[in-house]
Amino acid sequence: MNTSATAVRFDDNSMWVDLADGRILAVPLAWFPRLVHASVEQRAAVEISHMGLHWDALDEDISVAGLLAGVGDMSRQLPRAA
Image 1 (cartoon, one colour):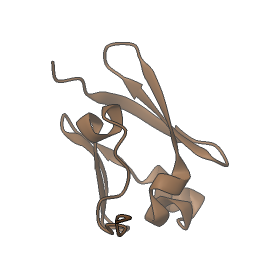
Image 2: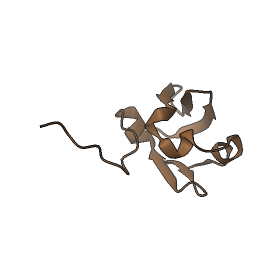
Image 3: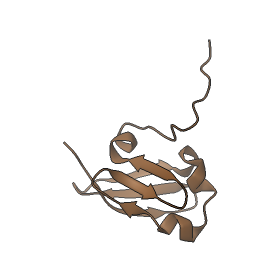
Image 4: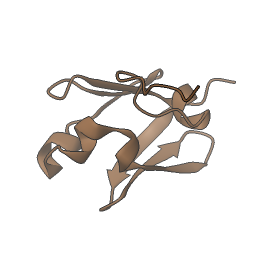
């Protein structure tokens, strides 16, 4: 099932994403460093599409599928322990 976002809002620690099926996701802002360091105005400039969330000025793209899978920022992979 492809569930799309309908709205996005922020508090001091989380990004809240309303989904078309009625669910609301809360994800830690710490997962997305570009959003953590963004201004309120930059965060508000989100573009919502059927695929996910996009912030042009921040060069940030977040898929709803990734959020549902618990995946944060994949642009920087952390080294794995041996």
